[in-house]
Length: 154
Image (tube, rainbow, N blue to C red):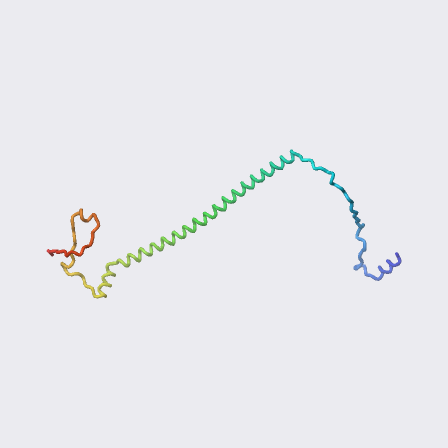
């Protein structure tokens, strides 16, 4: 066999040579072990330690979870506050623009110009009658009536 190996080695270059056996072969045999007669002995000290450990871990988990929940709620409320501030700024700017528009629409010069374009003229003297009453009548609401009112122009 050594002669056959020598002839094979002579034919195969050294770079391509590989060993057939990389180490000792491992052989496993199965053993039938019967553990049915073994009885597990309960260790009360170990059980108590495990219960204490589980209680401590549950408490730690709840503590960390509560902190994380509170932290993320604070961040969420911060975003809501910033959103409300932006909305308030937009609404305030819109209110300012509407007040400017209202002021420009109530401008007496603009109203006079539009009235003249429609053919209206300023009232003649005596054409406007101001109704003035005593203070008791002006405090309550004024109701319209269809009764003719006679006013003497002075």
